[in-house]
Image (cartoon, rainbow, N blue to C red; front, top):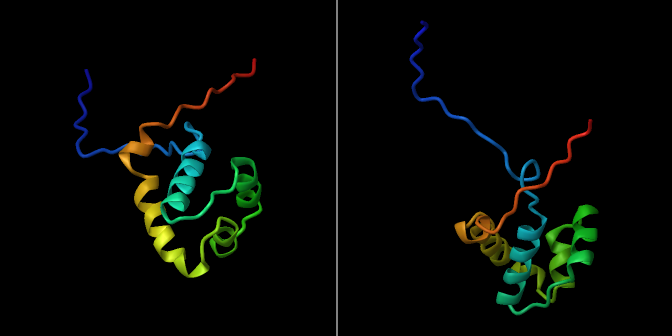
Length: 100
């Protein structure tokens, strides 16, 4: 019998995009933050078209009815909320199809 002492070992798993589709959470947080700041969120389809085109927050926020000078306040709200337990708990695992 072989005995191994394994202590202080950590396993890190990147769930975002690998096991969990982050798109619903990302959009939901964007929408909540824009609404909280008095803006009007873009619809989900338009939002993701722009995000996939790597549009900057300086361009996206005015399209959402917010001033560019509110960017830092928006980003603080967004960052505080995106990894909150309330939001993370709503994530769903991706269904992965196995090819045979």
